[in-house]
Length: 156
Image 1: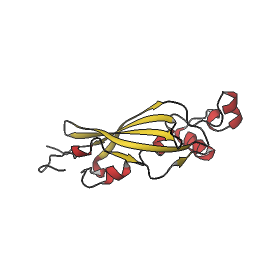
Image 2: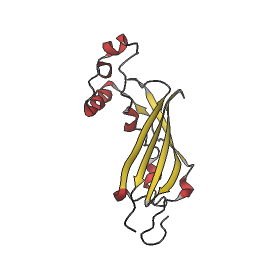
Image 3: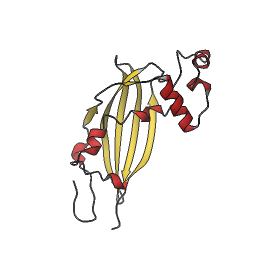
């Protein structure tokens, strides 16, 4: 919802809405290896199954920021909804954090349910936080992600 010229406000009616992912995400060794390379982390537990097992893991481990790959999949529908009023041309990434129940491993099949947990104004900016619950397809909790995006305001 937009109010007046130069004044922006995201539609607060979206707070509390939950969006389940339409499909599961299958974690594989190749994707973990590619992600680790992209972030410049050379830890062998992200690439070598034997190194991961020697460190006490059942298979290759995903780096802690790996859930960003799929965690907004459920909320994408909401963020693209014109009734929310988000102007993607003015969006920047604000914050990302993760709380883990357990590591993510190659072979995991994960699902993600995302909720728009907060929309607030800070100065001329709008901050929107999406909280995503990541579980296995069997329902085992894996992690919770918190993603805050900022829609920058224009000059007053």
